[in-house]
Each structure stands twice: as structure tokens, then as C-alpha cells.
Image 1: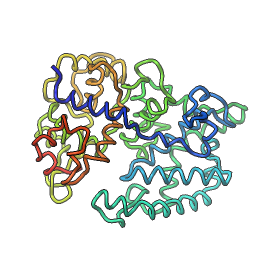
Image 2: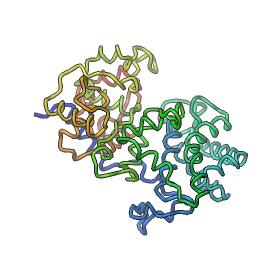
Image 3: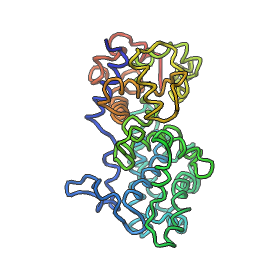
Length: 393
């Protein structure tokens, strides 16, 4: 007999498989010749040379940069900003993805382009974003860290992910070699999950504070599943080889649906500070899902899911060489999907969470429960309204 959490996760993944996100990300002018006649990414030509780099290398650089930048409250606005800046810099001959050194050599021009693009996106998006989030347009900010300074944003957030390929590419070019430096670096790790961690934490080349855990997993999702740039037949580079990117949509949908309550009691989430009493908007309880990372499951899982969890940790995530002693909440979705037959991957689950969280399960007292495609298995939509009324993300 399937559990409530299994029903919720499979339904979210099913919804996500019908509503994939990010497909438009690579439809930029500099990548137009990477596409088939039907406008899809030409996967068969990824290792062809494109001037200084392979196509795969250029796209990985763009996705790594996008993951660093896509950590603010408005993904739509961020992606528009990245598109505007990338296309304008290439029009000016600053081919910074192919030759990152050009980005730093032309920093003054880059600052002007980013500043003007930010103003344009803010004018376009601020009012709509404020309406969707019950906020004010003056709070709209794409620069992260509450920064308002273009120089700080460009050097830190753009400069860090472009520095890694720049450091080694100049050596490759001096030897007349086509650069695959970022791709080689990423594939040197044991799994997509380890790669997502080391992209941030590597003691020499890690992005550090420029890349959050969620952003690292988002990059793994894009590069392995959404676009197949790092995908391999082995399970450690497959659809369950990385954790779900934890953001407010994850916390809100999994809490309201009741899935999180099958893995631990509310008091456990309070103790872990996943639920923070009276810290949310309007004095309501705040759900900070990133605090869930490393939290141990306190309720018993089915034998099938528990066995699948071992398989996930040892052969997909490659975080353990033998059976883990404790089950971590953030990795449980991988186990459920594997136990259910591996029909869906983490990308499907995340796409479903994004679609439901941004279109229906909104972060206020009146979400669109009646229209939500998850309503058939959601606890909040079936009588337990306190899961909506008492919490915010």
C-alpha cells in the first residue's frame, strides 16, 4: 500500500513532467547555431569546436553563471537580465563565455551594460512581482545580498563563475587546444551530487559564498537532466544523482500537502528551526526549508523506501560507501522515486514544485487550492487549512 508522501511526490513529479521549466534559457543569439531546425538543442553536436571551446563547454559556463545569479526572489527577472546582458555583450564583441578574460578586460563596458539591463528589467518586472508577492515595487532587487551597487554585483556574482574557466583556458589556448576545462573539472567528481557540493566547496576552485546549496543543485538539475550536458548512462550521473534544490516552493508545497509530516513531527521541524515560530509575515510561523538540510527522519519509512535510500546514497549520490546509519530528509524524495520504479527523476519533481508553487500554492492566505492539480492528494486542500493559514515561506 502506497503512503501519502509517495502519492504526493509522484503526483508532483507527474505534473512536473508535463510542465518542464527552463527550456527557454539557452535560446539566446550566441547559441542560435547550436540548435536544430526545430529550435531544440542539438545534442549530437555538443563536442564540436566553437572557436575557443566546445559547444558543451560554452553552455556549461552559461548554466554555471545562471545558477549563481538565479538565487534571488524573481527567477523570471534574473533570467531576463542574464539574457539581455549576454546578447548585448556578444553584439559588442565581448564573447565572455568563449573567452572569459574579455569580461574582465572590458569591465567598464560590462558595468554599463549590466546597469542598463537591470534598470530595464526592474521597470518591466517590479510592479508585477510586487503584486504576486504582496510586496512593494521598491523592494524589487536582482542583485542579491541586498546590494544595490553594480560593481559589487558584477565582480562577485558574475566574476566568480567566469574565473574558473578563465584560469585554465589561457593555458589551453597557448597550446592551440580547444578548451573543455569546466566540463573536465565537473566530470572529475564521483557523482552529480558531489559535483554540486564541490562546485561550491573545492578548496582551490570552489565558488564559495557566490553559490548556495540550492543553486548548486539547480546547476546539477540543468546540466544533467534539463539539457543533458553532463548526463551519462551510469546512475551517478542520472536523473536521481543529485538532491532536490531546496527553495520556498519546496517548503510550502511539501508542508501544505502533508508530505513533510510523514518524515518527522512538527516539533522536530521546530527544533531544527525549519519552522520558526512567529518569524513569518504577519507574525505567522515561518518555514525555512534550507534548515532541513542534514535533518534526520524521525518516523519509520517502509522497507522498500528504506532499501531504496541505501541504493540512492551508495550508487546514485555516491555520498556513502556502505549503508548510511541515518536517513536524511532532503534525500528521501530520491528514495521514493526510485522505489516507485524510477519513472520520474528529481528534475520532474522540482519542475512540479516550481509549477505548483508559482501558479497555485502561493505564499499568502488565499492560494488557488480549488484549481491546483495537486488538490486530490493535498492535506491543506482537503480540510487541514491550518497548514495554509498558520505558515509562510
